Length: 308
Ligand SMILES: Nc1ncnc2c1ncn2[C@@H]1O[C@H](COP(=O)(O)OP(=O)(O)OP(=O)(O)O)[C@@H](O)[C@H]1O
Image (tube, rainbow, N blue to C red; front, side, top):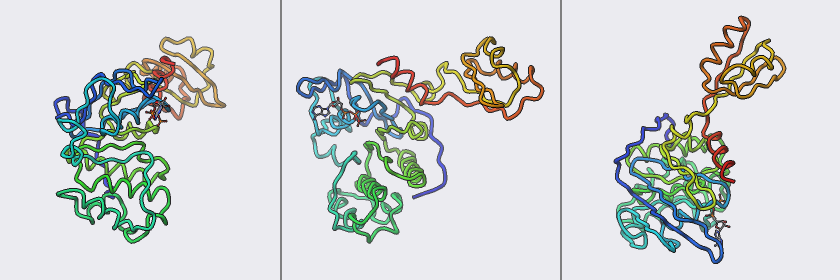
């Protein structure tokens, strides 16, 4: 896989829509898994679909893929009905659990999948993008779990997808393999592919996504550009080595929480800048100052806690 970093490009609000749910409801007997949700995947963008276990993420993907019918609402994939073969040919899919024939080699599996498409990506290019060149002749059943995930990713690329569905693609991958897959995803997005990504790794959403949808019990809790979710009025974490008494600092405007941790003070403050200025002015010996930006994880935890 490529290793040079590609930055996450800004969101383009008028990029063509590749996959869309409008007011979609899905019921499983007595349980309503999706309660009228809207979401949209656009060309050249990653939409991260987040939510706790059971929130409805996989159900939403199944509906978009045409694997499950919506009980109400509209579903559009590549401008039409997901059941049509012409739409399916524009898709790349990596679901949470996939079983592939363990006796076949990696190159055989990729060739088999490529045979389904009129203009597949060349085998060597697929192997290179998925970081599988060295494993091309290994049998699938002899690969590690992380290597098998890379093969499933490779198969998702075979048909030069216009839209890619990745359901927790990096679960079980080590740090190097995860970052390599991120790079491969960024390259596809830079080429115009739209990606719907579900993940429980919030740093993965931060590394890849322009837009974030948070589901909670089958409802959309938030649908916003990543930058808005992360930064919207959230307190920053400040850490420094200081002799200032925590009880005094706690009284300062903007300070929400202070804890002493040995020689260090840990603060939560909003806005953070005046608090940092005051810390520096009040303690000439202050050292090791760190200010941490509001993370998507904080926003996600706040939102889902409030909704529970
Ligand atoms: N086949 C099914 N029959 C009945 N209920 C189901 C079925 N599939 C899913 N559900 C229920 O629908 C809800 C949404 O499930 P879904 O798998 O879409 O969640 P998820 O967000 O993908 O969860 P996870 O993060 O654990 O993968 C859950 O309450 C689940 O128990």
